Length: 124
Image (cartoon, rainbow, N blue to C red):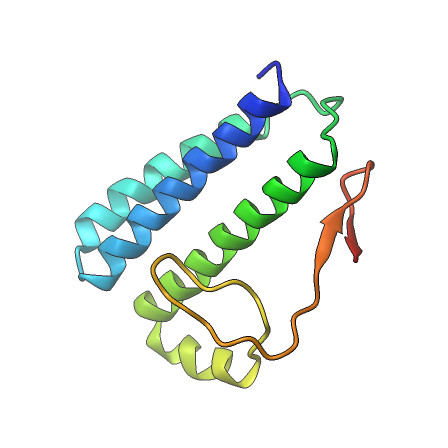
């Protein structure tokens, strides 16, 4: 990837696959979920080869953070659906993260984070 726009677009692609995975899990299509998981893993492997010297401006860092948070929210719901016993534990450890695809989540005093120039998370 050569530009930050291509980089963010790639993250959007990963997020789209994660949304498809969530839809498959919600409908109990386990074979589809397994196939999408393979695609997801391939995309993540490709993402790991991105030029580490690629710098993102503030807008691109914020977009990347939003997409990553979406992917993590989808992953959490997929785990809840595939391992229901973990959902009970997760309810004890609830955080104010983003809602997964197609869901709304009430706000309980959000904390906002950003990504610093060195790609570390910072509280805003």
